[in-house]
Amino acid sequence: MLILLPPSEGKAASGKGRPVDPAALSLPPLHPARTAALRALTTLCRGDLDTAAHTLGLTPGLHPEIARNAALDTAAAMPAAALYTGVLYDALDLAGLPTTARRRATRAILIFSGLWGAVRLDDRIPPYRCAMGVKLPGIGPLAAHWKAPMAHAMTDTAATGLILDLRSSAYSPAWTPRGETADRTATVRVLHQRPDGKRMVVSHFNKATKGRLVRDLLLDAAAPRTPAQLAEALRDLKYTVEQQPTAAGKPRQLDVIVNEL
Image: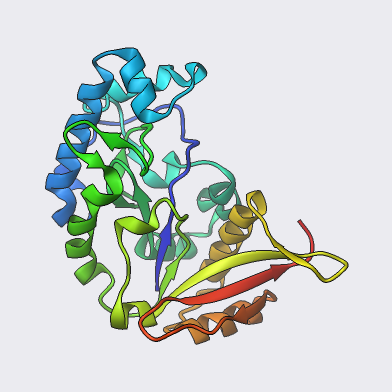
């Protein structure tokens, strides 16, 4: 099972190790695009402050992020597992997983990133601020920048087995499963069912539920190979799951229904 996650805006304050080595990161086909994105971002952030803030969509209170971006090529790095914080990652609690479940997570999880394309949990990267929706000078929209390299990298990475795609809409355009790959891809929508029976999409608890869902699958050592098997695995874990009709060649959508937020 391959689990695709979004990054989080919240990140650890600083790394503690050597600087990032883009050539040492997983998914080697992404290396040229990573180098180009890193160079474009550091160059932007070493220039005019207002231009950098506008390009990155940063409010005045986040201007210190610009100085941090400017030094990314020399900043101390840390494993991605320790870097990303926020609601989903708090619920997933990677650090609190038993050793065997943590190993499963390292093999299964791929985190998409505006700056790095995608990284594994053991890839060492520095704290940064650069969302997928950014248009970097000389590169343009990052989702378009990553599209061809990600397609190449995912040819092998997503070659077999179930793909559990929990990315947010901003990160999905960087790689779109198609054809046979889409047939074995499952997406998850979290719906809150109120006492009156009405359902509504949730935001904050969408992330928390997805984090708990991944954690439970890892702890259970679940190994579903199809979206239908995933739905059954989640039901075994006491989730309420409904499969939505989907056309061939499109990812299968699973609705997870929660009664309490």
